[in-house]
Length: 117
Length: 114
Image (tube, rainbow over the protein chains, first blue to last red):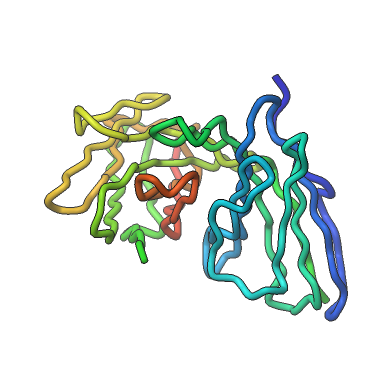
C-alpha cells in the first residue's frame, strides 16, 4: 500500500510569510503526527492528531498550528516565518487508536524541506 | 518531561565489526521504546520496538536491543555490521498512554567502511 505522502517536498519562503504543508497518511491510519528535524535540535515533536482532534502538542510557539480532516489527511501551518523555522518537517501516521495499546508503529513520510530566507 | 540521550554522535566501523549504540532516557513512568533508522536519502523507518515482556528484542536486519529498566537504557546492538548499515540511528521513547508522541534522541551517524 502507498506510504505517507507529503507535499510539497521542497519550498523556499521569506521571513514573515506563512506556509502550509500537507500530509496524506497511509490508508486506514487515523493518527497523524508532525515532527521538525534540524541538524542542531534533531527530531522534535510538533503535534499529533487523531480523528480530527489534537491529541498531543509539543513545545512550539503558537505560530505552528495544524489540523486533521475527516479523511485523516493533515495540514500544518507556520505563520510569520522566521529563519530558525528552516527545517525538514516530517509527518508520520500510525494505526493506533484510542483502544489500541501499545501505540502503533510510526510510518514516516519523506518530509517537506522548508528554507526560510 | 522525558528526554533521551544518545552518547555517540558519530561512529565509524569496519565491516564485520560489532556495534553497540547507547541510549538512555529519563522518565519516571512506564515507557515504550523504539529505535528508528534513516538510511541515506530515505525516510525514517522502524528498526525495532519494546513494549513489554522479554527485555531483549530483535528487529530487522539482525539488530537487537536490550531494555535495562534499572539503568533506563535501551542499547542497540549488532554482532557484525555491513556497509549497508551506514545510516543515522535514532532512539525514541514514548510514555505509555501518551498516544503516538515520541521523544527522540539526537541520533548517531554510523559509517561502515567496506
